[in-house]
Image (cartoon, rainbow, N blue to C red; front, side):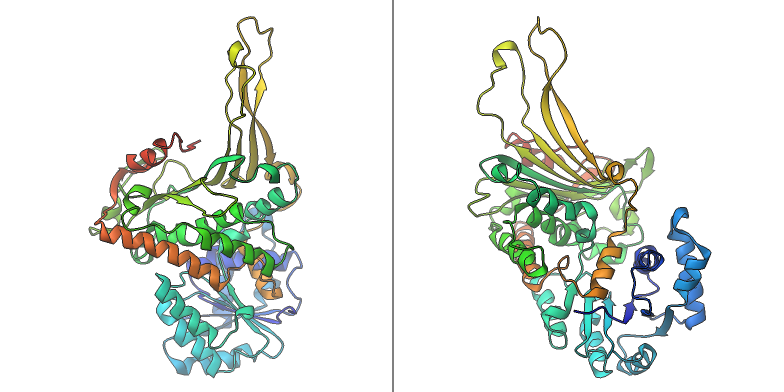
Amino acid sequence: MSAAAKLLLFGATGDLAQRMLLPSLYGLHADGLLPPTLAITGTARSEHDDASYRSFAGDALSTFLTDDRRSDGQIARFLDRLAYQPLDASRPDGFGPLAQKVGGCEEGLAIFLSTAPSLFRPTIQGLSAAGLACADVRIGLEKPLGTDLASSREINDAVAEVFPEERTFRIDHYLGKETVQNILALRFGNALFEPVWSARGIDHVQITVAETVGLEGRAGYYDGSGALRDMVQNHMLQLLALIAMEPPARFDGTAIRDEKVKVLRSLRPMSIAEVPHLTVTGQYGAGAVNGAIVKGYAEELGAASATETFVAIKAHVDNWRWQGVPFYLRTGKRLPQRHSEIVIQFKPVPHSIFAARGGRLEPNRLVIRLQPQEHVRLLVMAKEPGLDREGVRLREVPLDLSLDTEFAGTRRRIAYERLLLDLIEGDPTLFVRRDEVEAQWQWIDAIRAGWAANGMAPRPYAAGSWGPSAAIALTERDGVTWRDE
């Protein structure tokens, strides 16, 4: 695919656009990575003309750009790229004026579509009727793409009526993070890991996405979604797939996504009877986070709710490589720390030569921290200095790869910078294919069916804690402890 000459940005006045999309596009512009003549048209329900939207975008950049990235000259040149056309996507007559504003799509058009699930079909039909779906148009779809398998298929069917799969780019912004991409480099660029990257060498895997925030203005969306659909269905299952996938033949969109979908289809389905034993749900109550008193979820929402703000899951991948290895997934709001990380717990050595001398061994661990700091840390055993008259003393020490330190001269990019540039240039590698999405939903829907059938209500936990005590029991009964550092 050749680079698009135009970009159409839906939701151009929303929070995502202000915090992420506009700063990302500006960063690409400032570094000379956008096509020189790329024209960007924003659209949303808000009433703006070109001048007022450029002023709006300028305010967003002033608020969300870091000081080292601000340049009055570069900002002015970037704002010159912007135009705006108001649109109510539920009204078909608004798409004609939008097409006139964009100026056609014959030179190549990339569309970033962020909208409510109910508006996907009318938006896609409106784009098609207005002539904005020609052969040189590719479309990026921001979540939520449905609330279950059936609604996801409905949205994907609506998109597929106009845009073929090879021109459909489903966005999971976690895949744009440098450390997530480094999982592939770590696994497939280093010979030492592959011989032990299986049930032969790995005891279990933990994936944690912990947030300290509560609703933060997302009450309408979040209460209809919950932690399982908001985090596990997309981000966490994508991380699991990257950890568990077989080596792809090539670094391209087809080979990598082929291997990911094999993992997702190998996730062991949970029966209704198994769900209470393999999952834990919770909802935060009042407590303290980072020393500040915070309200409980229901109080923040202003109403009682059965929506889960925490979920922990014990999952299995039923294939030869991973048979018998549990994958523990955990995510929640109002937890003590904000971090996202993957912990690979290796099996212990088969025999300790140090035991008779008092030396205690811990199994090696590989910790991949995605945020807030990005690092890869291999925890290994080393001997403490000394003459060992009272026994051999061993201690776990880290071998660190801090991306911020090792690549200090390289600017750390927002995930959306990579994804927007790939959308503009037509590279599908870091986007999610339809069969991946449907495999994810199929597994998630079985869990939600089990919750409903068993009448499982979220367990209360205090804000500032690591979730319900049952989440600790989920791992402890296997002799495993969550890493809470």
